[in-house]
Length: 183
Image 1 (cartoon, helix red, strand yellow):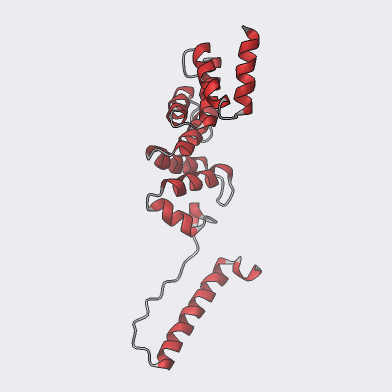
Image 2 (tube, helix red, strand yellow):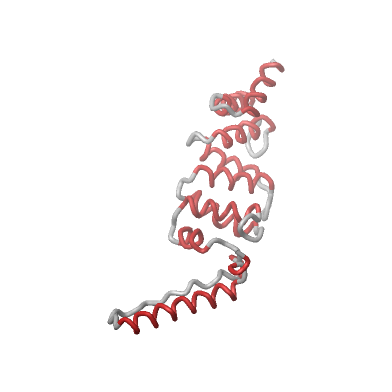
């Protein structure tokens, strides 16, 4: 609905709705105190962010923090902002969220919004990989294969590729097959 796309119109509608509620209660003689809460649009760095998601993330919900990090990372549902993505991924990753740990590793590996750091990427990939995240296992295998942030170690690369491949990760299956081909 085009009517709800404007934050100003949303505020006006919320105020009208609350005024109507107060008027109806006055009309019917209702003696209850009405607590009117008007949801204001999110502005500034969080403009466009789902207010319910933001509230859950601020309350410490790791899944919401990861989703908010993802929104800022890709600019989907929030303005693209790698520093905000890093901050929200970090909060979720510190709580043990494997997907956030993977995403934090990707930020470090790619150098999005921060200095590229393969050693830090390997730390976060390992945390997620040890929880069974196949994408992190594959990513950690790649770091070992190329010796990025870790000492090059084909046995470790094959180990992590195998873990991811066993979960159906096609790229890890290819990497593992390629390593066998080279031997």
